[in-house]
Length: 325
Image (cartoon, rainbow, N blue to C red; front, top):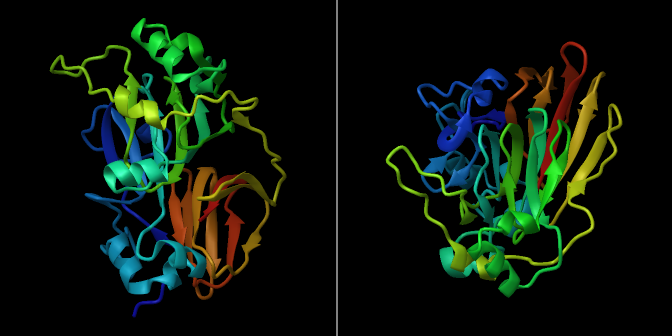
């Protein structure tokens, strides 16, 4: 059996009606002839969208096949005990040149009953945004189902939605059930449960190149929506240099922000894999007798069985996210 090592995968690109050019221009993704490149799926085991290893002795291997072969050595003891041969997370970059639809995702119970999939709890990290960019997360007033339906049917839904400014470094946690959308001008990293279930509530009456409106899922969304009003929608966090600063700690994933200007060691953790998402700058990963370089836009899966890894900033400082399940 080939020894495991830090794994980088070939991105899976998605053309979207709201997509743009930032995945190419800022993250240096090779979107090919996709005109409106809206998403880059970096690590995925969603059906028909399985990540493939990009380099090294395991080049060309599918992630789902590697999980079946390596099991807890790849996923970690705790993760494998909970999910077996399923990879629990989906990692993406998104570029919104235009507003996404107003939408919601179901929780685990509802998603399984309807689609035999996981629910979708997710988080966003804003990498870049144009001046004045905003996004929607949650409501701005107490609501019930009847008032929500009335506002939607009369074209006034935007009046009841909570709108937030979006600036580089901002973090938003979006639990299943929370209404949301990404506004135009935003480039972000998205960490979510492995699910592709979205209920589109309102799409600004847009049409595609053929003049067709996209399908809405209003009835399905009503059972999924959380109508509660919350005090805080933007996540506050501490950003100390050369430390693992936890920014989200949820039932499904824990994410830390690292801002490095000197080398640090990632200690051994046999319970879970780790994912590194490089947000700015570049660095070198050293382990045992090998190493690899990574730069802005790279996403790397660190198998649970690996021994200590050293992260060495290449020039200046580097910012990255570290994700565990």
